Image (cartoon, rainbow, N blue to C red; front, side, top):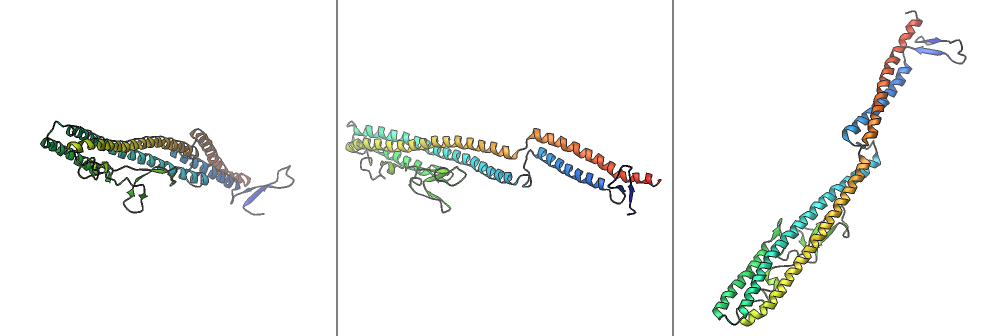
Amino acid sequence: MDASALCIAPEHATFMEECMYINNNQMALNVGNTLSRHYSNLQVSVQRLSSGLRINSAADDAAGLAIRELMRADITALNQGVRNANDAISLIQTADGALGVIDEKLTRMKELAEQAATGTYDSTQRLMIESEYQAMASEITRIANATDFNGIYLLNGNLSSDEHDGSSLTSTGRLKVHFGSSNDSAEDYYYIQIGTATASALGLGNSSKNDAGYSISTQQAAQKALAAINNAIISKDMIRANLGAMQNRLENTISNLTIQAENLQAAESRISDVDVAFEMTQFVRNQILTQAAVAMLSQANSMPRLALSLMGG
């Protein structure tokens, strides 16, 4: 028999001997393995409770980690989409504000045309009226050419095209508002198209090719200009109506995106976040088991000393 082991043969032992080993403490090894397992579980519980996350690494839940990261990316994109839509609303409001000022100029031009259309003014006075009429037309063109949002000119015709090209550094054509997390034309973006609001595009002033709204220097020309100004007001109102409809659509889109991001956040939380009540229970359990294993390891390490009593030590 190995000299490192002392064996005891109990009175009723018939099949095997009970041996006490000195060099190898199998009891301590078993308790040590159990302690290592409980301590590892305790570390996991501490990590989850301190971070608030059930999944802190791929080892915790590989599939859950993949789903969570995709959700987080979509949530971030949707939140940016909300900001994009809000920026588009600001752009629309900028254009609408400028069109409101143009509306005032058109009202004044109609007033001047009405004044020049009557026969109680002579040619000299009518030319004075014509001078202000042309000044109003020039101011409309200036406003249309100067109105911009973040360097994007809104009313000069740059956004009036039916086509859009975003392949170069500077996009051309109608403005594309992207708010979805993918690139589906039916779900993730739409376009803002703004008509030209210069005086010539509205058919007014001496830069216009429209004979009716060209001038009010004569009584006949002033009478024709009344109808041309009406058409210009209608054209301007059509632009404002389209912008108003687009603003309402964007506001509804923002509401939908906000709800979508909120629901995705809730789903991501259910996958990723720790259940504090459950994990606290596991923490206490693992803590007790770890403490018990430490106590038992101390006892197991002291067991070989019993062999001294057999040797008369």
